[in-house]
Image (cartoon, rainbow, N blue to C red):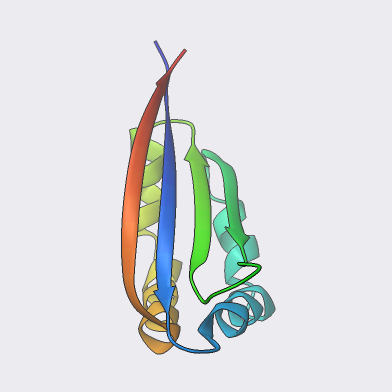
Length: 98
């Protein structure tokens, strides 16, 4: 049975950081690179209407695809951007059977 993995990642942003983070991850091509990772079904950022926190929704075909994504070289660049624009992250992980 396939087990799709879904992550909801809340970024606790520094003031002004949400829009700047999304702009930089898009302009540098990191977002396109991540979307091309094998097993990536969804990797989408949502900007808040109010406040500073940013939501990332990820969906992967399985745990192996997620692990390969997390170990990809481009993720070091993403971590650098997180340090630049965010103060913390909160993660929710779901496994969908079916």
